[in-house]
Image (cartoon, rainbow, N blue to C red; front, side):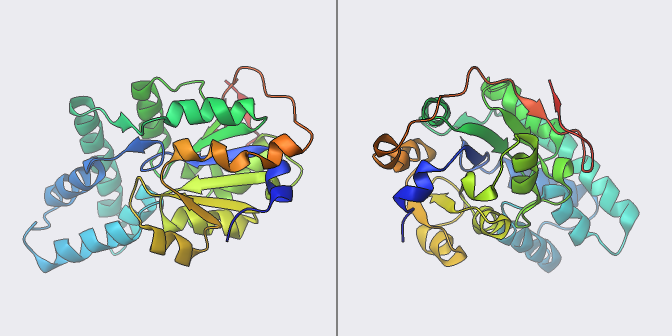
Length: 261
């Protein structure tokens, strides 16, 4: 299954996942999680810890805040401590071990924009961590929009972030969105939103079989291969005018109007 040429010609927005798609995680998230639950008294050698880590791994692509709240749902105060602790440990790890971009990721964004698409960078981390990552990678202003779960209401696999991007960037139809990610949750979010083009990449958490089982229309090796999906279909159609330099927008919170930054 691929992406029909008529669908490709109608695309106006590339909605790109960040961790595992645009940059390599290299285990940072799991180490931050392990430190967080240890602080809360969960023995790293216990069955409970192994069950928690298994849940974290099976929910890759989803909101990290939502996952922690689920794991400590029996004690809301402890859950809140887990969320704060996770951010703290993630900050420490990112300061010591900066993330590495996927080779060709930034160039892929420029190529997508040159082909006439706007670009949204999306994450399951919170806004603070997303901004830290964008600054670390030198990607502030690279995209037209950046989104995290709190901007939209719910994270993936729900469709909220994709739909928020459609509204924030004034698109007329969610079928004009190309969704790209490395997890089943990324794929599910795109399909649930109604995107007509959902692509999986193999630089992150899930393999080709998992991405195709989730419903990906196409699976490629890396985000750097995504612009090639637009050729020659777009070349055969009427070319859109490429967007000017990105003026990145931030959606401050669910239910608020998007504003330019």
